[in-house]
Length: 199
Image (tube, rainbow, N blue to C red):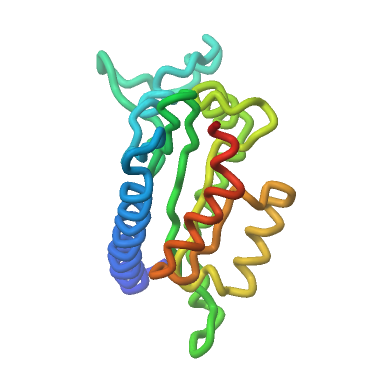
């Protein structure tokens, strides 16, 4: 990739990042208001996993083959966008809000080239599932996370099919928030499909 293409990519990432921040703020506002005077709360950027990778035990063989930084302590972990806690049961559901462009009317197929939706797949990995399930106390047969998609990706014929395939029987754990002015559909999805996991 040349310098010109890289500079365009940087601009695209700045715009995408700005939109993502707006999406996350709206999600937080909706649930902060909804959870008032209840046993539920929403936390921004929960820190309980912010050091899980740097603290991971590796074999002596692997340690001998990789770079070991000459620092006393360093952080490397995972920070989800949000955590929804039931303060009574102590159960926790972790949330990611992903906003992405997509292939819709008036745009070329290339408009859906982002990979935010792919980044959310890290939560499906055996290691993270084990850690999130243990901390969230939701049980071994439950996905301990919820991903909310916003933007044109929610109407992109390619991306919607990919996400639907990936989640398969766990379709309750993703939500296409196509109209962010409609907070009722978001809350209804949570109440019907996810809130019972936390009670």
